[in-house]
Image (cartoon, rainbow, N blue to C red; front, side):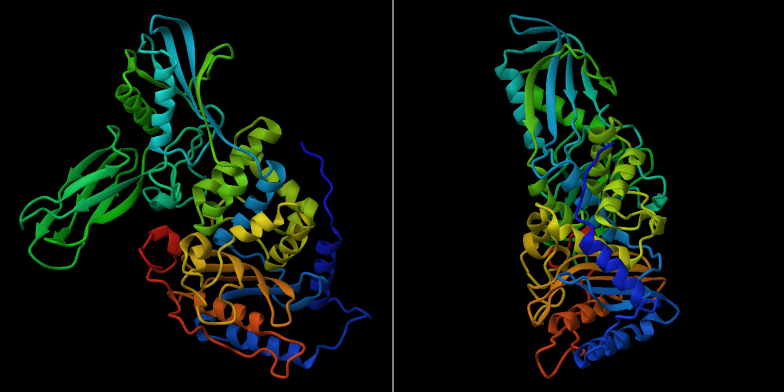
Length: 527
């Protein structure tokens, strides 16, 4: 268990102010100013949109400098927050693991060594690194070769014992399992590119040179672990309609549909079944390229002996740097790895229950009332997670006192910034408005659940914390309503004569994504 003390004053002030707004009378309550009255009317008008008929809406806005609640609608209502859950996970990770925390992947030899021969087993030990690429495994293999190992008489042992073997969250929808935002979690895994979606492979199909031929299908990284069943067809003309499917429990990717001659190749990120063996396959191939032969089998799940001799090592980027792809791109796998890593570091148990218990303890220390919420995973993919908007506002206010706050704030998506590494999941939203390059906030999307929680600087220069959580709507998207609230907050002024007024975004409301999905989850070229 950890023992830390955090400044509670601001978070407690936020909660007291919220309590006053939600119905508890106080003798010191101030009458709202005309500007605040206009702001309240603006947000009320947004929430009266017909798209929210019969839905649940919770909105809280707080002045972070004073803790004063500027707006509260159902702030104490428990709602499904989707990826806003990552605010708790990321803050706890920075606090409990530290911004400098790194994940290590090592190779060790267990047996006698001499004249290029290892008479024993070679261990590939995973440290949970979700950013391991095929190139990193290649560098590990090069280190093994440079250490003089040429033949391993025993097995290649893939050690993923840093975490437990629970690969999927218990509450996750079964039909999400093939899609990369619900990849299996392992302490030893591979990501195909620098989005770092560990436990996935990118499948690419390019048209044949003539109609009637099979498209050319390749995988990144190349591997011998997954098999492609190519049933697709190249046609003379028409729109691309390719599908890439992997059945539960297997690693055969079935490619179906059509692609026209001369069309741009189509790609899809697909999860693998058992990422530990996938990583071992990629590493074993790298060893062969560097002239190292392993005569034995690939064995999973055995712990590296304590006296095994170190041969090679790769360390990940520091956690402060990992926060960027994690939060900007709403990477679910990073959230789950960090949850298990927190459990491992704090209690010696790399499990969801251990990690979630530690996250709960941390956010309670910041002033969140954990008796009013339930967190079931690190990412928000579970629909059993329920968090009131007021508690998000409390966390957002409290963590401003943390030494790592600037790192965390910069890692949040920035509204309307077209640079994917800056704007992230907000890069297409609120462009050309006072909220653009102003709002730093975490997005959240599930079918029927949408959220936006973070910070906005108002027209007077005050940093406001806000949380908008919308549930149980039937519309294809309610992102535009979140944007209107954020724009109104960016326009809010107590000094100017106009005050806040409704200012719908000038950019298209929604990215070109299927209803209920994060822009990052479907990886369009523009979003």
